[in-house]
Image (cartoon, rainbow, N blue to C red; front, side):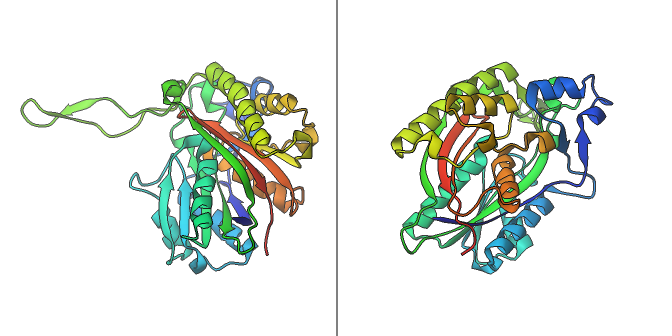
Length: 329
């Protein structure tokens, strides 16, 4: 499996911490000191998550120099589809990838990493030759914008990578570990509405819809700073990789304090920790590929660089992957 291209897209409107203070009682200092976030992008009335997915996908394909019709598979990692039956087929049509099968994969903030690992299995078996993996979420639809504890955290974005099977044994996914623990899922959830309406006689039906995001921030933080270093340490041990040999640490962009804590655990200098939290906040499944695309395009990540990555979030779910960036052939 070889990583050949990446792309990303964000909504045009960025909302700063100061602007958010017009809606809820908060401040730039309060948000930055606790999260490292300075702004977030929010999908506007004339935009859509589907459009962002299309733009990110086309930019990834352009970097690789591929035609969309050469794709065999599209995996869309999202927890906020525009259609509960699945948004990936619409993305397939949008970019003209008529030869690709397309489906959604839901694992919240771990979604991109889970989708990347899933895609690699299709490529390794030879079942597929070229795959598009997209991480995208529009959490602004499900945030309680009057809850200052949670509304300051999230933003909207889409980002993508394209992968192809290797003919010479090269594998840019050098190792991975994935975990889930549903017994702790209540600390971060977006539950369905439990209201019921009369149907006939003594029967009723459940009303469709979901409640706003519900999060116990303290418990999520403790989960992340405990589990992410542990799974990364196990992955590095299994792949016989030392932390000082890594070129980059690329974690899910949820909280700068989490990024700093993980880096400190492995004595990784700040210069090797990739972070764009200050500009985008937590964009869920989009954070890792969004940061990857930014660092590839500005020249920080170069072909051959080794990247340790971890995604973590609702489910609870978390995982780690050791990646190498190859870039266009």
